[in-house]
Length: 194
Image 1 (cartoon, rainbow, N blue to C red):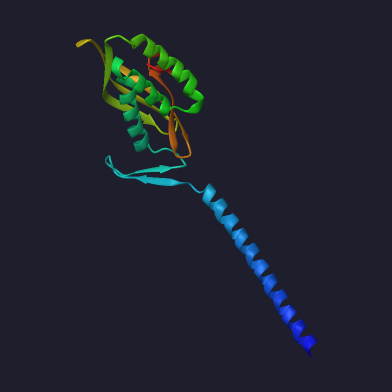
Image 2: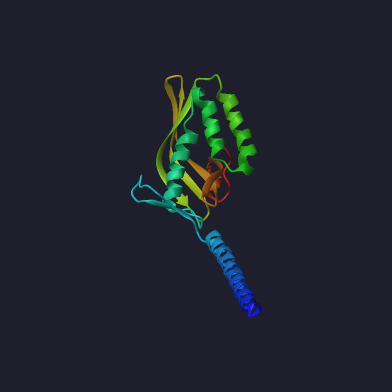
């Protein structure tokens, strides 16, 4: 009699162990499935409205409004410089550059820093228009580039600058920028840093 009670109890423990193993396998499979769904799903971040509409960043691509805002801020940062802020100017541009374009961009910016360092030449840009292309990840800004020597305005020329971007995950980074010449408007690529 004790033998039959012990056998029944052993079988009940084995059934519980087997059920617990099956439940653990099902839960592990569910965790893997949820991880795969979460990893392949587009990520979105909703930014607080600081322009006419709320902005959403998505891993599926960059929105026109976001590219326009970043281009506006980057254009003002890259095209406004004076001898007093050259190091900050260069560091700020390099901070938003893609790792693969960092070296070439730094080389071009160092030329400008070396030319302008110790001079009294400043420049500022007044933005009058912008075109953005979220599909090609390019943007162009048009406006007047003013050159000032000391406290005297020397030139005020209409110019167009093109910015090339890279978008990975949720990060928009600068690949390069340059002034658009007549040949560039006909389809050639613009030169690097202005």
